Length: 532
Ligand code: FAD
Ligand code: N01
Image (cartoon, rainbow, N blue to C red; front, top):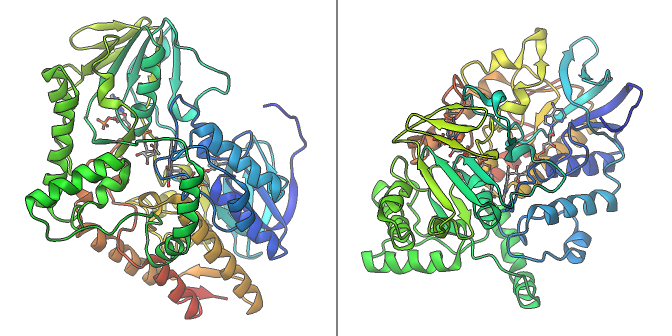
């Protein structure tokens, strides 16, 4: 810990946990309502994801022009992104810029982990405690704790015995890490791995990529943003804003095509492949619902992999074969498949010989030992529920959230959990969340919560609590929407499959009209909420 400070004992209107894009905007809106705020973040500063994930190659996969706040026109006009997909240092600088401009850091105590939050029914307040002895009472508790903020170390025997340097992509050191002249192992082939592998391969003497399950990746085709790009952006901005307001994903892109001949489909795949980015999944309207359309899009990518990777055995091992394309988060890369043509890069196919142990010298599979100087764990996160369940949250009657979610997360609109009054979750499970432009989704939730709190005050309401039946109905709608898609067919983190013992429930909401539903709930006097 860098700073020593006395424990905070205070009574405030609202506690905000998390100083990422969600928490920062929440503070801004609560301040506009005249509320007193205490914020906490385990990080040493603002930025959330972009504070923690400093691994080489970390960057956004939604275009920077859209992966930005829209609530401040001043910021939008003043901030200039240098690339189509900005790298982590630039996104972190942006978070700091906005936070400084609007004085959003002041309410936060950093390097402070929230340990518990308990509802006191008599006082109608939350009591929030931290690992630094803070004890804060608040009318409202807002969890802006992030969906991908709890890194997951794989349970491989012998990890502590390794004598070299170990890293997790999600908790990367602040000081520069050099792999020059080193032999490096990267474990995992998800988005974090795919971004870091291409960078580490430029520097390392030898790089072993340990792959258990191949993933689909499409080229980013990143590049500098010019005046021309900016002019085009401002020209299409009103249409983009409308698209965000009408849709759920908050992602700009052309309309997907229906009823194409095989030839037209191919041309469309080729066109989007050449444009680059996750927009590839928008090639066909039914790509994520129709196995035939999905296979066509997946086969096109497989062809590209075969064309790119010179060694046919390596190419074959890289072909994703166990899930529909897009049913796991698609990866967006800069030269990923090409990297396997480099002499210093070796793909270790764990399907043939799984990892047995980490040894003092490196990684041992059932076939051989790979001595390395450094291991990079790119093994993902306890997504969507991990950060909330890390806090001992107790609602009405002292009932723990962990019990309420024993069989998987249940929420009303992804905004509140029945039995936990006056507590809100930003981009919680049951909202579009990780399947959307998350800055847009953070903004939408923060706006909804702020409007709700203003309404609550104006109407003399002290307690707002999701009705259990409204929650059950919403959960059913979330499941129904997922079942119409191919998403449940993948063993993804969307479904909790990456965490042993985690209930397998598809967590994001993929049905349409999400904003409209939230707005109608509010317009109807907060339908589905108990008001006291
Ligand atoms: P976060 O940024 O995760 O912030 C949550 C904060 O809460 C963290 O700082 C954490 O320390 C704090 N916290 C959690 N629990 C506690 C606790 N108990 N006590 C104190 N503090 C706590 N999304 C996109 O839409 N587009 C992208 O291109 C994209 N790229 C990504 C790249 C990476 C490498 C990762 C990991 C995620 C990416 N995401 C992307 C998702 C990204 O998480 C969101 O876009 C967004 O940054 C989330 O903001 P947030 O404020 O909701 O949460
Ligand atoms: O994590 P992941 P991530 N032995 O869970 C492997 C966002 N993000 O950090 O599939 C060997 O996707 C695991 O293998 P398997 C984005 O939403 C965005 O990469 O379980 N391997 C898998 O390959 C993304 O989806 C960007 O067989 C093991 C990998 O580790 C989300 O964050 C960049 C293993 C984990 O992949 C998470 O991505 C980064 C073991 N014991 C992140 N345990 C952008 O580009 C796990 N694995 C914007």
